[in-house]
Image 1: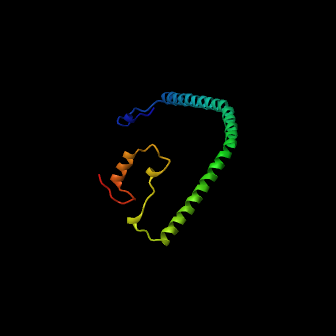
Image 2 (image 1 turned 135 degrees about the vertical axis):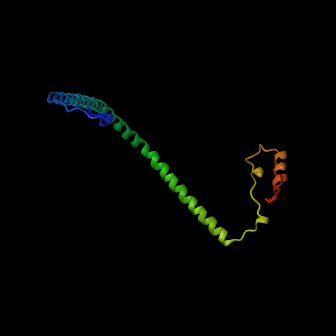
Image 3 (image 1 turned 90 degrees about the vertical axis):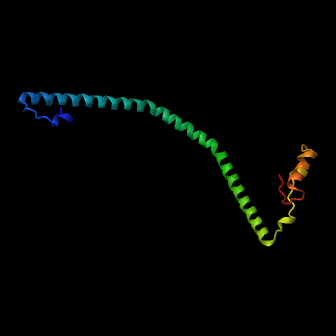
Length: 144
């Protein structure tokens, strides 16, 4: 066989017998390699044949799951579309409201979650602390 180091040295010419032996050895090596390739292809085909029924069964189950989930998928898509529509309407209303009215930030009174009847757990000291820090009536005072 040819090896990268064999280019440096000069080889004596081979006899017809030696040439025939080397060709025969090369043919045998190629034949062995082709047999291994053929065996690997046969094994791969066997594995694929064993796997195919499982893939078909998986596809069948996947279709049934998809059909049963499709109702929920449609519901959530319609819910998402409705929420997007409502948000767009709300944003348009807010834009129109802001265009039609001028807002003076010093007189804005933001709703306070602390005065809400839904938060009775907040005691007076916490309310007082919030008023001290942020002021009452939504003023923009920001003390440490």
